[in-house]
Length: 398
Image 1: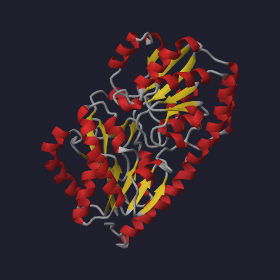
Image 2: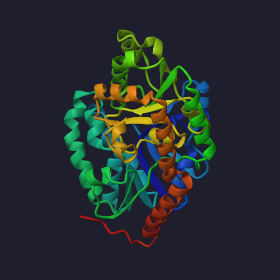
Image 3: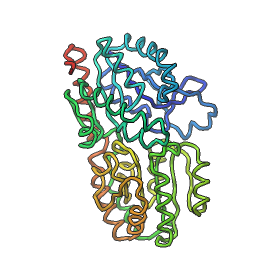
Image 4: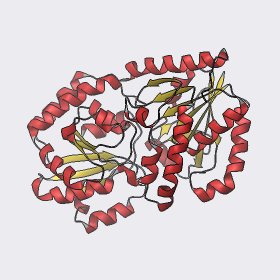
C-alpha cells in the first residue's frame, strides 16, 4: 500500500533530485510510516537549492520508497486565491494513486488534502503538532490575526471527525482539538536512548562553572512566535545581574533584523547567530556546550528542541505556550512575552545548585521521549491505521 503525506514543510532539492530538510524531516522520519505502508509520497513545498555547500548543514530527506511532489505555497491568502485550484488538481491526482492520506496539521496543504480525500472516499488520518490559532496570531502579520479564528474553527472541525488522530502532546492539543475517532499521543521528537555519561558530563561542567555562561535557543529567525525578541529584552533587563554570558541562537533565517535589534539594545557583542546544523550529533554537541536552554515561544506543540536539550541534561526555562508546561515545572515557566519574568528566571538560573537539580530532573524526564519508547507507540498506531485501510474498516465521523 502507498500513503500520501501532506504538509507545508519546505524541502530543498539539489541538482541531482535529492531532497533535504533543515532538521524536521530526515529520512528516518519516514520509517514510522514505512513500518505500516510500502511507500510514502510526500506532498509539500519544494525549493531548488542554489548552493550545494549548504548540504552539510541539512538532513537528507529522500531515500528508498519515498518520493516527493512539489506543491506551491498556499499559506498566504493572495496566493491561496489563485493557486488553490492548481494545487487541488495535483493533490487529487496523487490521492487517486494512493491507498490513504496522512495530513500533518496545522498546514494549508494538509487541510486541502483532507477535504479532497473526503470527497474521493479515501481513508485519512491526522497528526496534530501545533495550534493553528497560536501560530497565526503570533506570526507577526495582520492578515494572520484575521485568519486565525477561521483556521482555528476549521482545524477543530477536521480533527473532530478524523478517523485516526495522533497528538504530539499529552493534554494541551487534545483539549483544544478533540477527536471522536481513534487517538493516541506520541511526541514527534526522536532522541536516542539516554546515556548516564551525558548527565555525568553535564554535572561536571556545572561544577566547573565555565564562563561565559552560554544561554541557547533553537528556532527559525523568521518565526516571530519563537519569542526571540522576548529573550533579547529579558537579557537586556537581566544584564546587571548575570555573570558574563553569551546568547546563542541556532536556526535558519535572516539574522539582519535581529542584529539590528541587538545593536540597539546593547547586546550585539553578546549574541551569536549560529546558523543551522544537521540534526543528530551536531545539534547534541551544540546543546552540550549550552549551559541554559530557553524556549520563550508564543506558540508550540511539544517543542522538539526543548526535549532534545533536556535529553542532554541541559537546565531549561520556557513559556507556558502549548505543551511546554508538560515538560517543565511551574517555577521554570513564564507567560509568553513576559520578558520581566524571564529576566528574573535567568537571574535565578545562574545559580549552580539550581542548575544541578534541573539537569537531573530534565535528564530523567527526557527518558520517556527516547526513540525505543516512542517508536513502539507510533508503530502500533500506524499499523492499526493501515490495517483499517486494508480491511475497509475506517469509520468516518460526522
